[in-house]
Amino acid sequence: MTGEEVAAVLARLPELVNARAPLVNRGRFFSGEFLVEADAVPIHVKVQEGRIAAVEQGPFRMRAWRFAVRAEAQAWGRFWERMPEPGYHDVIAMCRLGVARLEGDLQPLMANLRYVKEVLEAPRGTLGGA
Image (cartoon, rainbow, N blue to C red; front, side):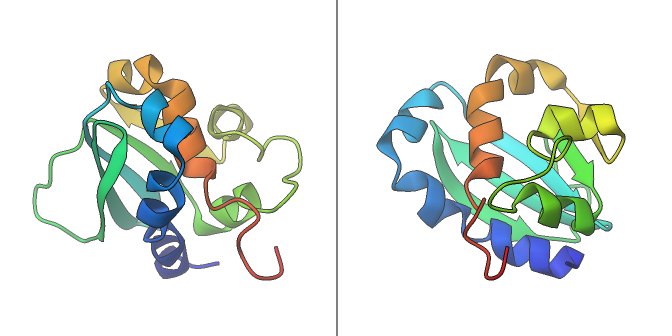
């Protein structure tokens, strides 16, 4: 998997997340923008009261974000497998394994951790052959 392929997967977040009322409800107090990065390809995810308002692939000049989740594209591919192996089953586990890292203002991430984790997991099992 490449950074561009990760961006294409994340581009589907609005349809995957916004159709799930319980997930949107879980994130209803979260609005903001966060960065997901794969192989130096920045993908900005904008959330408005739990709904995914936009997903845009960079690069951008001085684009603001509150927190970032960075990993290699190969790690994201393993994370989105239908049954990911231990260490790739969760964003925090990927950080503990050393294949991902969190940056920026972690307060909004931690305050909405379950929501953000479920948003990032939304494509799981939807990739062909995964």
